[in-house]
Length: 211
Image (cartoon, rainbow, N blue to C red; front, top):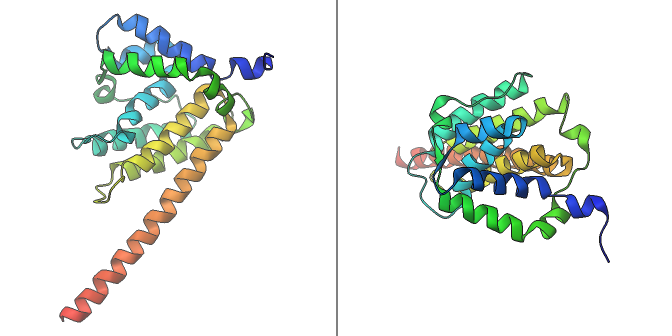
């Protein structure tokens, strides 16, 4: 038996976006600027996905988390202030390798039915209007944490995952996914605060013991 129309088409837009971009790339690397100009109002959120995705993979970031995080924080502030979000030329020049684009598009196409159950349009007020300012603030906080040189395992993974959830929620009009991104960002801020307090306490005790 076929599911409801909402369930069958949910998650469809991102899969179609990726298929369209793969055809547009035509075997070549695709600049972020081309993604933004081609996808128009969806280009910004798609650019966020592509920029944050490498940081959730188990590969070295090669020092890119600091500049990428810094500039994403600035664009998050622009969104929070109600402006039109844009990316600096530094990020727009970055390219998405064609094999990576093709792999992501194929994976999304295969997972379309499953992703449609997880990500779908709902709680629209959370993704539009004044609520976009809150998304901008969460994006800014997560991006700042991504930029910090935290010498811990998975220090890039968690803020990048929060950015991905916020971007995916914007793309699909999924307020629940955006709320998950907000929760992840709050968790990151609390965790960072507690870690900083523990580090200060440890340093104080070490100095007291040495002196």
